[in-house]
Each structure stands twice: as C-alpha cells, then as structure tokens.
Image 1 (tube, helix red, strand yellow):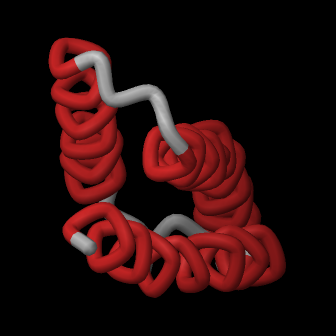
Image 2 (tube, rainbow, N blue to C red):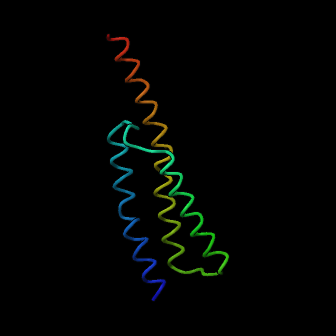
Length: 97
C-alpha cells in the first residue's frame, strides 16, 4: 500500500511537469521560470531515486521517479534557451528605442 500511495503522489506531480515544459517552450521567456526551483525539484527526485536504490526497492515506483526526473530536467535547457530569447528581445527593444 505505501508504494501505491507514493506512486499516486508521483503521478500527480508528474502530470504537471509536461504541462510546465510545454508552457515554458511556448512562452519563449524565462521570466516566469526559476532555475533554482527546477534544480531543487531535480535534486529531490535524485534523492528519491537514491533512496529506492539504497533500499534495493527496484519496482514501478522507481520507474515513475526516473520518468518525472527526465521530464523536469527538460526544463533546464528550456530555461537557458528562453534566457537567450529574453536577451535578444531586450537588445531589440534597446535598439528600437
């Protein structure tokens, strides 16, 4: 039962990450993104994965942790791409002024 509840929690969190990635890609700005927050979530998932490995608990919950980590990690390059868009836009606005 604990594994089922843990999986439910991970699935609930996990469903929000693809939505976040798509939103961040479409927005083409890093203004509403926080690299610190993204990295904090990544570290949390790594800690959860490490705990499962240390306990030798190789089951479907570990798969969900890894999937969530992969999806959240997509936001890291998106953040830097969006920062470049922000810099280009700021430069364009400065030149246009």
